[in-house]
Length: 163
Image (tube, rainbow, N blue to C red; front, side, top):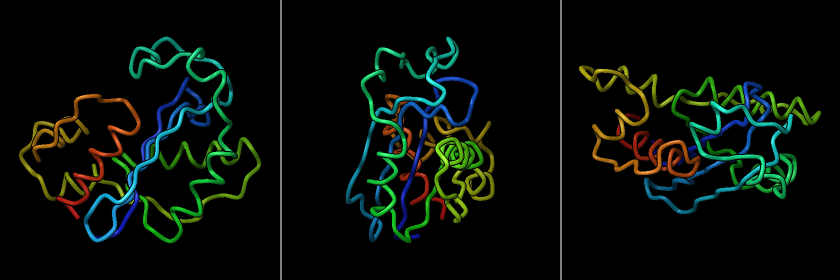
């Protein structure tokens, strides 16, 4: 696959609509051409300790952030017709579906491609197919795992290897 968008969400709590950051990597002709990272005021706006423990974000980080509809209005035209890939795409696709519904926005009608699922088919013999494991296997240094942009960059690198 030569052209695509790699996307990753982090959430503030157990609600899939509670996206608190998004990382997006644009790949054209197998080259990263742009990246996007934004903190998001989650909906609903509270943090579970376990989520903060995973990604390090707190309400203090996102209280001044924009809400998702403002960010989506910027991202959707940039994504255009490009396919979206995510590692464990059911999670990220579910987050997008939930946050769009939360705000009463039109659903995103296109399916995501899953680098995790594809890696299971192509990269057999790994102990698991978690993002960090697959990234390490292909030689990608995922130094800031669970930072949405770092995870999207790892996803993009994996997509270039497995699709």
